Image (cartoon, rainbow, N blue to C red; front, side):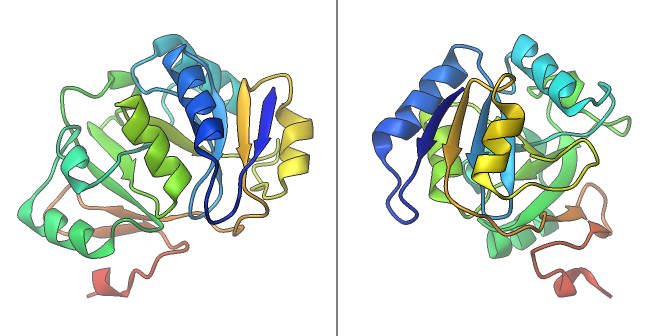
Length: 204
């Protein structure tokens, strides 16, 4: 694994560029978000996506979310209602995963049985720069141990995933809390998971 430590406020562009090259070549990376470390690849690279499923020991029916660069980018990969647009415009970028109806451009391996996808726009410069420079969304699935506990120590992550991941961008200890998940695929919003983001506006 290539391993690079990033400056917390002004992450080095050269290290991010190295990660983008790995993604373009079909590699798998670990990168920081505004909540936890994520394992990622280009969503359009089938082999890399299957690698992540194997790394996570998940079957191909599990919902993996992916990172888009902004609200406009989301509309390329999901069907966004007027209500969903207003709420996402208010909350993004931020620690939320929004479940939306999938657009046909998204690989079907990322669809749920209800033809939905989970989309993130994290408030973190590294994650957003990776997506913008790659030109495609990247997978966002939490870095966890075999028991499913989230890992926030870069050194522990490096030791555990050294032989499985191509490159890691380390940014110190991250908050040990996952994103809130809000289902906006229907007319009535549904809170799937309460996490780092405020969900009070979705409680009737």
